[in-house]
Amino acid sequence: MIRFDHVTKTYPGGTVAVDDLTLEAPRGEITVLVGPSGCGKTTSLRMVNRMVEPTSGTILLDGVDVSTMSQAELRRGIGYVIQHGGLFPHRTIEQNVMTVPRLLGRPRAEARDRARELLEVVGLSPDLASRYPGQLSGGQQQRVGVARALAADPPVLLMDEPFSAVDPVVREQLQDELMSLQAQLQKTILLVTHDIDEAVKLGNRVAVMRVGGRLAQMDEPARLLAEPADDFVASFVGRDRGYRSLAFQDVDVPLHREAAVRMGEPVRGDWRLVVDDESRPLGWIDGSPARGGEDVAAPESLRLGGTLARRGGSLRAYLDAALSSPSRRGVVVDDDGVLVGIVHPSEVLAAIEAAGRAGADDAEGAP
Image (cartoon, rainbow, N blue to C red):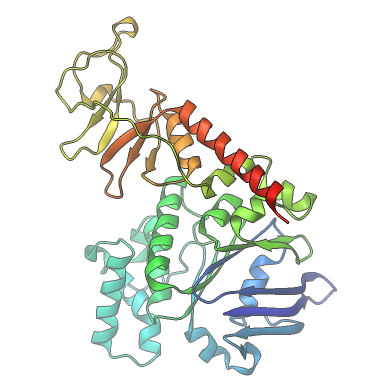
């Protein structure tokens, strides 16, 4: 558990970066600090591992005042992930991940085994272990940064804009990977971002900070979106917060069977979904003669538009899948990516309306 107790940071010249911050990041959860530039979120993060010293107030790590610990001891027990990975350019990937275990006195063979294990955990091929950071893509470097932070199995991870330097597709993959890792490892994670979508996706709790380093609101993501504390929070989380809140509503939408085709099979009628031999969706093909449609499913005719929703996912995922599909039929897959059915926009919207009515009834019945 990380606790900020009336913490303030004032720089020479009088600039207040963090102002009387009190909040708690619970053990085993992801707590996200989010806010506009200049709100003190990165300064707050760096005060935990004493890269920045507070002017006043106390920061407790599992009940221990961090100011009473040596900086070296403190930092060796905290994983730290920053933009661009922060890797040592002159060391191989394996050597980068081995750094902290070696500093802690672990034998070289043990540290090497741990590094190789973690590279696999974060989705990197063992073939990359002997390469240097400059030979890796941005997304691969970020994965190495996460592996290095986990190498000594620290109970606490600090993550400063860890995925902001990569493209949107890789960023989503890294977010999903972090959530998967957290489900297994249950670390106490304090993460900084300026992206409200990332905050509500990753955070068990989200702390919105305003310029001047004051806490505006701290809540679970669903409540933050549904009940912003004031106009600043409402503006920051966005006018489309109602759409974002669908990510926290249960799905009660009927799934329909889809007569999919495989490559080389005839395409008759309107839009047809093409799947591979394991029934994983590949894309859509327009078979309508009126639109000059295709007679046979072929790779060059595939339309790849449309996101995939996971079975049992959120209303937001189902609606996005339905609206982004060229056929206006949302594709739903299982955890292995295998087709389980399709959903129609009208039925997703009906489920959203029903959820809204249920929420209104609950509110009326509340004491």
